[in-house]
Each structure stands twice: as C-alpha cells, then as structure tokens.
Length: 263
Image (cartoon, rainbow, N blue to C red; front, side, top):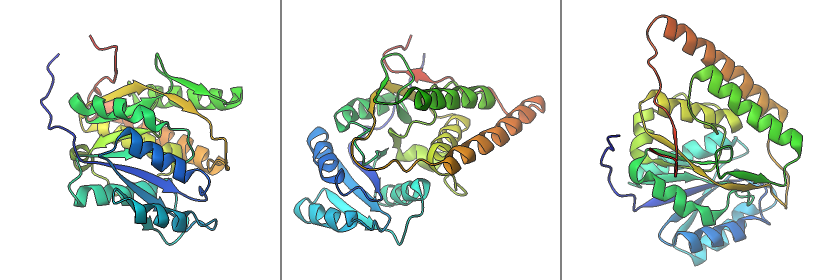
C-alpha cells in the first residue's frame, strides 16, 4: 500500500456543541485539556436556557485554550459543527474534532484518534469495529445503531462500519476538499453526509476503536425526526448512487480501514 505523505497535525480545535449541558461541560473540558494540552476547545452554545453558555464563559476566562461561541438559538448539531469548521478553516487549524459534551465520547481516547490522522484525512472513533464497544445502552438502541450503519453501508456502498459515529477528527485540508456548502443535515444524517463526502472525494478514512459510554446526566437530544431524516436521506442518496453506477458516473469508493488491522 502506498501511503501519502501528510503534514503533521499540530494545531487542533476540539469542537463541543452544547445545549443544556451545564452539569457535564466543566468535566469534559478539563478532561480534554488534560488529554491533549495543546488543543484549543471551542464551545458552541445554542443559547442554552440552563446557563451553559455563561458557565463556559467562566471557564474560558480562566483558560486561554478555551473559547465560547454564542449562537442565537437551538439550530441543531450539524449547524453548530459547520460554524466550528468555519472557525477552524479561517484560523489555520490543522484538524477539527467533533466531540459530544455529555461524556459519551471519552477525551482520553482523543490522542489515539488524532494519531490516526498521521496517514489519514478523517479518523472516526468507531463503536462497531473490532475493539470498539458501547456501554449502558439498551438492546433496542444498539439494534437501531447497528441497523442504521448496515443500511448505510449497503445503500451507499461505503466500506465504513460506523458512519453515524459522532466522535471524529478531520484534517482541515479534507474539509476544504469535501466542500461543506449545502450541508443541512443534522444528527446521524450529518455524520453520514460528511462521511459520504469524504469517501466520494477520494479521501482516506480510518476507523479507530473506541468505547462509547451513554450519558449519566442530562437528556439525549436524539429524537425521532433525526432518525427519520437519516433514513430518508440515506435512501435517496443510495438510489442516486446506484443509478450513478449504472450510468458509469459513480466510481468504486475507497475502502475504509480500521486502525490496527491494516495489511
């Protein structure tokens, strides 16, 4: 296998969208700062009524590596990340990390995800690969996630096992190549959308096994509308993909790789 020489990843922005995460945010920020001390944390708060934004301001006042972006209202996960990507691109960061504020994404695993960018464009913290696992999920939630990923894999022809995963790191050069104009997806669908764009752009995607831990404090933001959006869009994209193959427009996508299992 020929490995493309890539620039070192030194300047990292960890993007943490928040909406009513007052109880979880301080601990997550502290753990990120301890795990990757050189990284900057950008909190993207959607005007949380519980005062998360103001709490984040206090954290930022004491730490120059933390800043807060106050958004006018609850606009969704996808739009928050797009705002964070724009900052990372404008300010010359080498990589942008997506991380939940609720503790489900362990900051202690971030160094391994960033290390995978040494020879990749997108590193996904994956649950449904060898070595990955999920804790404290009911069976129905596991079935839904695994089923969604199998359906996505079959419909879109992507060799990615966990395209819905929300813990991931992009090289900013990859974000430029993928093109973010027109992305309006949210939740599961946002992650699938960007994974598909990376694959279709011929970028190298690797999956790093992680342990996902269900939140202990607060309420999940994942609703039926987000699941419905993902199902609808994946079906539409899948039909377009298959029609494109029949017409010879869509080429064979590059295979994903799981870190630790490369030939």
